[in-house]
Structures are given as C-alpha cells and as structure tokens.
Image 1 (cartoon, rainbow, N blue to C red):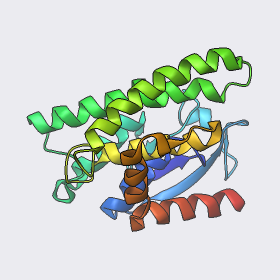
Image 2 (tube, rainbow, N blue to C red):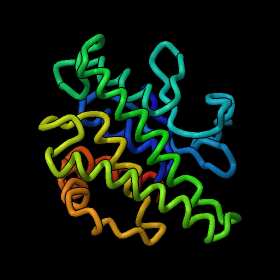
Image 3 (cartoon, one colour):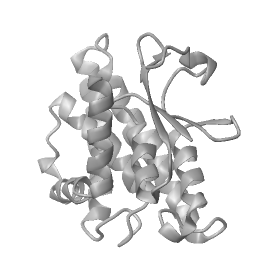
Length: 204
C-alpha cells in the first residue's frame, strides 16, 4: 500500500492507523502547492480531488477521505480493535464520532487557515468550535478515549486535527481533559513514529 501524505494535514490520521496495525506501506510525500509527489508524479492523476490523504492499495485502487480510509484499514486487522465490527451498534457510534470530527472539528478549523478571512469572522468560527470542544471534553472527562477505554481510529483523527489548534493561538488548557487526552495519545509509540517519519520525509 501507498499512503500519500503532506505534513501537518489530516493524512496523519491514517498514517497513525497504519502503524497501529503494523501493516506494510510506503509513505509518499505530496506538495500541496504544486500537486506533485516527491518522485515527480502528478498527484491529481492519483486523486483528482487534489488533497491528501489518499491510500493506494495493491490492486491499484485509490481510496480517499480519511474517515473511509481509517475504517478500511481497521477492518483489515479486526483483532487490533481499532474499530468495532461492522453492523454493530458500537460501529455506528464510531461512525458518529468520525462524522462529528469531520464536520464540526476538522471543518471548524479549516477556515482559520484562510488568510483572506478577516479576524472578526474567524472569531465566529472559533466560538462555534469552542462549543464543539466543550462537547468533546465532556466525554473525555469520563473516558480515556472517545469510545471508552479502547483507542480507536476516531482518536487518531481527533488527535490529528486538534494539533492544528497551536497554529491559531487556541489554548487547549481551557479543556483539561482534552490536554490530558492529547498527551495520552501523543505518547503512543505509533504516533511518535508517524510524526518522526513525516518530519524526516518533509526535510528530505
């Protein structure tokens, strides 16, 4: 498998999951501005949407959208328990979290990267985001991870997007349970390995 990634993007989430599952894969860096891969290919020919993450599996098929990718990967090794079994209530709960992270946290942070949006408008986005983080914190006040005691693909995704808050002077200290959570996830060997690998690839 090949994972197409760019540093400091949502592709970190499936990267973490691949390492959690100990699956063989090749990490391929994408330049988000030129849409070229590190080996000179046109990324748009791989993913016409033009953004990471994209996972190319061994038969040549390419899967996009992080929430779909991480579930596909988790189902390759169900014994790792990164996702509950398909068809169960618990799996539906996982999908609920993945959709919430996508639509409310990921999408809530994305406009803040746009330099053309005035600060007054960004303040509105931040206010809405903070309400969503209140909801996340209320769950993490009770549990170590989003689904309870077990780390899941939803945690890989949430950790990834919450790392972006440091770019916008958002102090997560307002939510102590989120701070503890970020530390807990960040100490996982797989997370550290993924971050180190991406940093090394970016510097190459």
